Length: 314
Image (tube, rainbow, N blue to C red; front, top):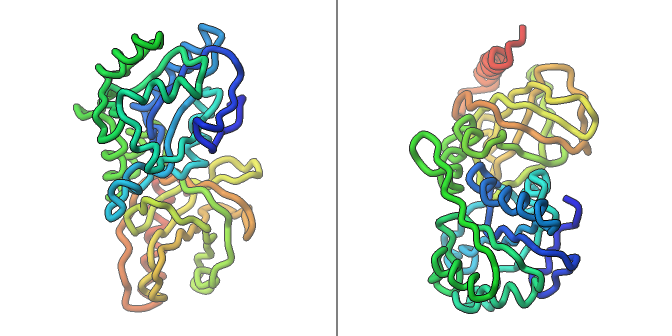
């Protein structure tokens, strides 16, 4: 991404004076369906000598509108910005979703955006895009409003997989069930946890399976259990095979918050303080409480063998 993300919203945006091609949406997960919208904006900007922009919102509108049941996000904001940049987007504008912004009517929406993005040339959305107070505006209204203000509107049809539209809701369901292979098929990339290795209690080392403990607190929590994963870090070791447990560790402690613990299947090059990313490959089994440490050790040994087989390791 050639321009930094701008977190102050439309009222503080600063972009060069070239035609702006703006993809608008939450884009949680930046999945295969979102890419059809975003790539259309990127290509149009390149062909016209303009700038491709993603206008997104934080927090998710549900935090304001239904705080008792907010939508859990697949990606945190920095990860989303990084994914958008990887698609060739020139700039990301993060609009704070406040009560004042939510009160803008559907008829006022395009004039509001154009007032702050003076060189707005094109708007790019998904076919199910809704906007304005009470979500009253739809794509047909957006096209009509765009025509009135000299703005091209592109609506991308929904992308389907296995006969159903790809959606963030569908992906959340897969992650919540531990179906990381299914989630990856919809996302177009492996679901990934990123964080810094932190000091743990070294219990794994005492039972023969040392672990890395990752400082990671996702909004959307995957199913508690054991997974085959790949690990990478800032130092160039590539993606290394590992087995991970995500959960409350009921056999050894009565934890209140889940932890991601990773046992490397090859020599571990990482230590506390190192930033790492963890790609979730396949769910192996749900977390459960064992009768004691010996039973836990035996099960971990079986988990390691299954993970090694997943990666075709001897």
